[in-house]
Length: 242
Image 1 (tube, rainbow, N blue to C red):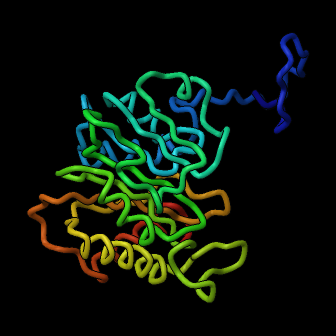
Image 2: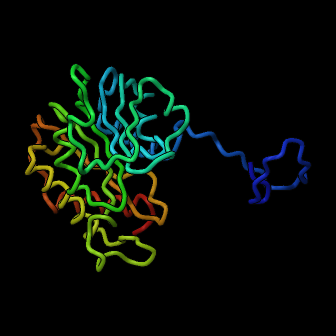
Image 3: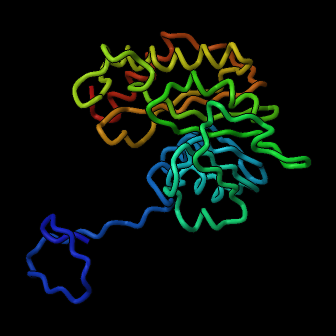
């Protein structure tokens, strides 16, 4: 709760009757990342119920929480860091957490034992590394149809010369180039294009992020740079950055 833009967290605090009081709604996920993935699952009509999933870059666990609430049977959570994942998820028997683990270098034999269920749906939210560098490992760690929802962060895909103040990529053409670069790398491995949208929430510095949907069985034609540019321009308009 805030009173006149000041956070109030002590029960019984007296406030002026004319004060501006705002009560923040409790998030439905352990982090705002869950809202990002939720849009993709809903818009793309991806069925998660009963599936084994892989969360690359689990961090606090927003994506994993979203998957579990959507009915996932099991989630492998991978993160290079340590101690960030929500306590409830950390102790959830449906979550197999692998911390201090570099997804880029992870091999199936290091994650799965004999008879273990292999994910056929992967979601990825990583920072400070291009998605193109982790896609080969992601392909090896999943099984057909290898459905994937990738959170594309343009600031980690384009060169430094195209990143503006505070690390924000504002040009929709640069954003489109970043997405197209990831798509081309995925296509070379065997993925097919399914869909693209933008996250309803920007990154901490204000970067617009995108959800790229892939699998091995799409009947849709491959996307092209012009089509992606239409999406990035729409995102700029929708999020007020045009």
